[in-house]
Length: 270
Length: 352
Image (tube, rainbow over all chains, first blue to last red; front, side):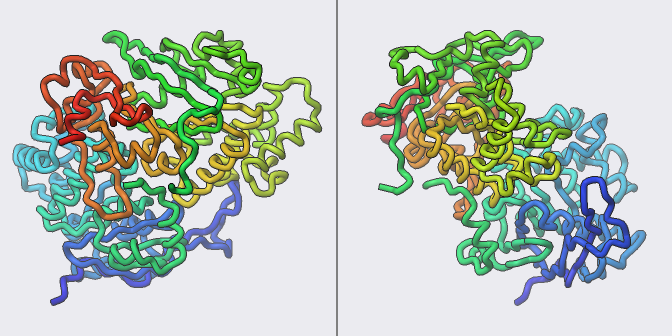
């Protein structure tokens, strides 16, 4: 029995013109291109958690933005829920987009500070389910906030009143209110303290089970990825240098870069 | 015995920094709060003390107080005796010789700072001037502490400082600007600058937190080499238990302004006694895929600390007596004088 492939990516490429100095532009005639994503191929099964790990500049954030269709790749194919993800437009794109949601390092930082939590969390519904009344949206937002452990009592407060961990919960609530199939989390705990980060990782794992989510966790931290991922991809210079079951990548890494990355993690004696 | 094990605690080593009852108080609209509350510790020559804590623990305020860099309006109480190698050799500091960093006026402080105690930060760009070549900045630091050196001598010392921080091609790098350097190189430059005047104590506040893990390893190795070569005493502030395991001889865990547990690093990490330390260790993601367990709740705001033990409301071993008064530091295990924790249930839970 093989599980359903929810996301399938073939030979994805994206390059940027390489600027040669701080005050120079690369220019279109520049022969020097930086391959941000350089032939990435992978697929994700429904319900699994894929961890993508890499250091700064490896291309992991560019890859995430391509997967979300925020930027266009130069070439390659993407299929999401069986549809040609690069070629859906208009209403189809909107319908499919709600199936793939994102949480950021500090999701609230990019939101309107004058919007109350209830509106922040309910806003995606206003776009994707315009038939809902204001009070229905509010009710759904309240349920969602309950699910992420904040409780409906926070509906009328402002995001800035909350701590980092609580803001991350608000971001997760906003991402999940549309009941996506796939949730992508880019550095979801890097800005958080250890004890609070652990709460968020626990929450993501619980919600994955409760909402039958497929998760993609992107992080610079191998230990963070190790907590949740069933499969791990190691990215370096735009390529997946190693990708496989988490146990194998973490405990029997084949690629020299993966080995170096693991060796560099300062270990806590136990 | 593991090869990494170092001569622990003070033994015969000379004391470099002796902090006694250091408190920092900040004015707020609702009265004074105390981000650092009666913190005491000692740092020997060539020793690294790790200060571990989450945001709001007071670890950064503690280092700013020692550097005389507290925000306006803040006040520091207590004593922080800095013993220079010279004063130790003269035997003039039987008890409390040297200088009290907290008592010195700002002009004296400025002379002492950098000369004997220096600091590096998480984000090197905050310490580097973006419109000045990095060599010129190191030269400035040398000149400030040793006026009267010739230009040639200063230039030689700049290159020496960069070499000491293992900056490759020091001549070329000295002529570059901070933005032309990678994050790791920038941190090496701030280390070179901090060490330019040969301080005996270095405070490192999350110096590798913003760096990639492979670069972090290089910087930690560099600091370790410098510690050994220069007999540098280091106060290493971090939230990362893995980093502290790698660099620190001893560790002090801070929570809500107090040290709640302290002792030799290996012992504290392997046999934690305070419920907060235990919780922190369980919550830290590791390569080994053991299930992490979060600590419920968050660090209490300084303005409304709970009565008694500050960790009480988040603690799974909480009993009513915990709220009566703030517990004192006590031996974590009967056999150890150096491993101490601030929990009234010590003994009760280590035996159960």
